[in-house]
Amino acid sequence: MERGGVIRNAIASVWARVGFSRRSANAPVHRTVAFTIAVTTLAAKMAKADGVALRIEAEAFERLFRIPAGEEKNVRRLYNLAKRDAAGYEAYAIKIGKLLKDEPELLQSVLESLFHIATVDGILHPHEDQFLETVAQRFGISRTDYSAIRASFVHDPANPYEILGVRPDISDAELKSRHRALVKMNHPDRLVANGIPVEFRAAVDRRLAAINVAYEMILKDRGLKPRVVEERGP
Image (tube, rainbow, N blue to C red; front, side):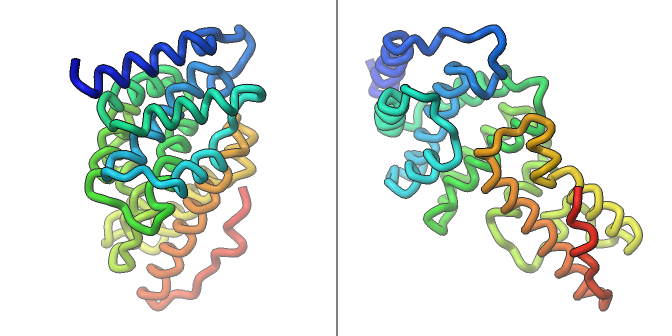
């Protein structure tokens, strides 16, 4: 059996031993062990996508994703096992996509968190880039939305329009309307109120900051005065 298959079987064995197939009927999806196992494995395999899984990436994962009480050792063991090989990651992306099929905002937050982990070392490796693009496809996230999320983490000062997901020929009025809509859509208080877990706050804050910086850059380039402060509220 190939190496990827051996590791997948080992992951399945860990899953079964710690009871990761169980789910409370009242638990939200992002608090279930099924989600925890899938997102842990996906994050670990992404860390390995560039060939070297760094400790800083594992630390970023533990900061972003809440590990169920009492499962810390099991999750870390699973992460260490999954990071040995990037093979099979699409299956976990598909699983998360199905688990969160009715929660698109949470799916976007998961992708943003994966970007946060991938870029924590200051570099987005081409293999990580391809990995994340494929994950976005499996999540059902559009190319436009994916490009906007990516632009928040991979800075291209020459193209702030990508961060806002608009064309350079957008009118000033439409630009202002788009910025207000994005701020409202990505405001941390709103997302938390809508069920986005607080542990995704770091990625959400980074996304919102990137939106405001991009807006300011475009206004400056157009000779307009930024009015970001009054538009930051939900």
